[in-house]
Image (cartoon, rainbow, N blue to C red; front, side, top):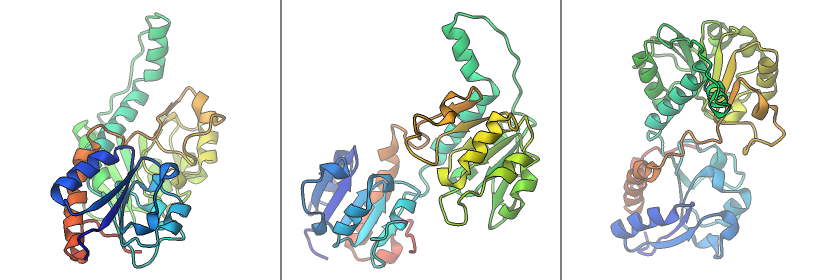
Length: 316
């Protein structure tokens, strides 16, 4: 490896990553930019790209002909994998393993906000209206989590602490800490009938696209809430909207959508039984502190040519 490896860091907080890399690897040549549209240098010279997949586009990937390694700053790498210009020889690593705390707090926020009718409380406060409403306990209820991995395990452990029964759905059923049981994903419509809260934490893959659709929403109890912190394309959004409009489910807490940002004309904005969050489940203030150890460890391994030892290496 050369002593002047060129690293492109594409992120609003690029300088935070750059400062840590300069301290540990002073020989690196760092190129920093906040957005693709602000790039004022030849990206073909970059051997390494450090970025969130959502920040890149096909044109950048086409021009970055010298890329040997991409470090995704997110767990999901679907934006990179879906790029037609991702070269087979380019190493791809993710930030898998850092989102457990954020996901369990996000899910807790959404299910508690739904169960306690937080939007109504806010409206009452703004109107100076004193209206006492009882609310259902989470204890004794059933949460069905679609997608079993590190983040969902963190979520499951917290929900069990609330006294909930937690059932997981996975294509590889197995005993997993925090889950009362894990069943095969093929049983989704059947197990949706048991759910008081159906929680989606699925990644975006071809087999997961539109997995949660009309049949699943039809199977759910009218008192069941749907929570989505996975990927927007895993849910048939039209079917979700129809189920909400017709009160076939109690409501939804959403952090991800089919189209991001959520279009201004989406019916979801104005539904009284829906909580709309602007994809902030993983947008926590301490993010760089969590992901930097992976970036620094992988950089050291990359520079040493120890590619097979790099953390969260993704086959493609």
